Image (cartoon, rainbow, N blue to C red; front, side):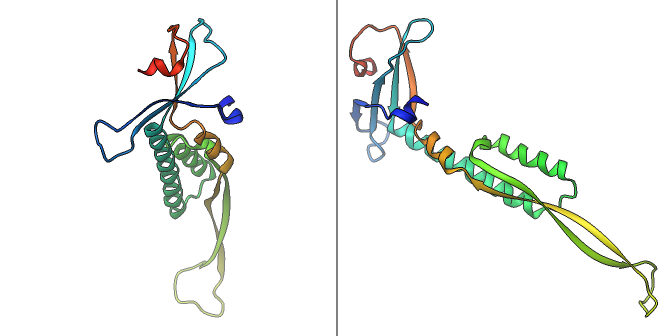
Length: 173
């Protein structure tokens, strides 16, 4: 949470063309020295990669899109058990790892139809019974603040080292 709240000053360590594909995103690595050590006493240097940042954002967007698609498919089915519906919703959120990106509520809609009590053609004396069927659907919204918070960590990973050099950008060379 420190990175999201404090906006650290990143130092550019590497900026070179991508050796695998000259026309793609260049390899840019930035570093930031952590003020704290690990419990074992090692230095922590935070590294931010532009390629990884784009990849992380793309993957998060894909997981959110898959969740929304799964919710749309779920709403097309007719669930008559709230427990089963809720179980499937939680399964979708867990499978796509998007639980913290969505707020949702289960909506129960009651459909009423009438049916003749006895077979045959209806007459003036025909009696009918009311049939109630409860259908469950999901209404959801994205939690923009959580998505923005997670985006602060796109492309960031720790480099734990026992190296004694003073400049963190030298560690990536």
